[in-house]
Image (cartoon, rainbow, N blue to C red; front, side, top):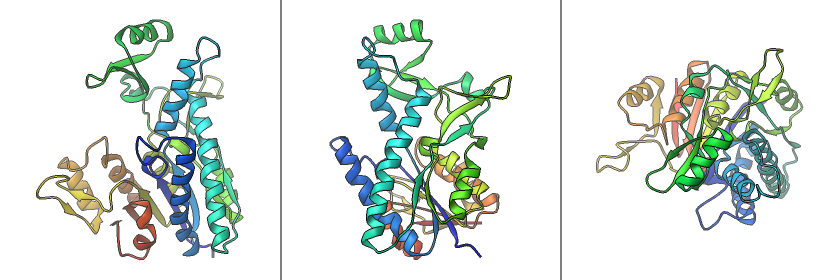
Length: 314
C-alpha cells in the first residue's frame, strides 16, 4: 500500500516576506526556510506534492519586459507564468534537497512546468478582475489599451494597473506525468502560480492564454484528482478566524464543511484573502478528501501533529 499523499500549497509569504526582502537572494533564503518545514511532511512518511504562488515574481518579469520594450520583445503573460514555475521550482527543489540531505532523508525531487486547461468561453474572460504587473500613469494606460488591447483599471489612487481574467481550472495537462513521478516516490513541485493557463483551439491543440488561475483552486483540482489524503494550504496566519481583525475575532482549531459553508455565506472570508482557500478546502473535502489544514509554514510540523493550525474535516 502506498504511503499517504499530501499536497501543500505555499503562498507568496513563503517566498517573499516583505517589500524589503524581494531580491532573488532573499527569495532563496525564504524558500530554504519553507523547505525546512516541508521536510517535516517527508519525515512523517508522506509522499509530497508542492504547489506555489507566483504573483510578485510574475509582476517583476512584466516590469522588466515593459522597461526593456524598446530593445527587446515583450514577454507574454503565459510565458511569465512558465518562467516563474522554473525559477521557483529551482529554488524550492534545491533548498528542499539540501534540507532532506541534512536530515538524512534521500528523495528525488522534480519540478514539472504545468499547463492547466481553461475554457475560452469562461465568463471570467468577459470580466477581467485580477491585477498584474506595475502601475501606470493614465497616459501610459491609454497607450497600452490602444496598442496592446489590455484592460486597465485605476487602483485606489495609486495609478492604473492591468487586469486579466481568472478562469476556473478544468484539467491539469501534465497530471499523468505527476502521477508517474509519485508512483516512483519522487517529490513533485507542480502547478506553480495556478499553472500556465491554456485553451484548446478549433483543432484541439493547446494555446497559451493571457490569464491567471487561482493557485488554491488549481491546487485543489490536483489534490482531488490525485486523491490526496491531506491538503495543506499555507498562508500568513496561524489559524482561520471569524470576525477577523475585530474585537470579537475568534480563531478556529477545527471546522466542518457545513460550518465553513455557513461562515462563507455570512461573508466571513473575503474574496481577496481567505475566501479562495476556504472554497478550495470545501471542494476538496466534498470530493472525498480526508482533511485540510490551513496554517503558517513554520507551524507545519505542529499542525501535522494536531497541535496548531485550523483542521477542516468533512
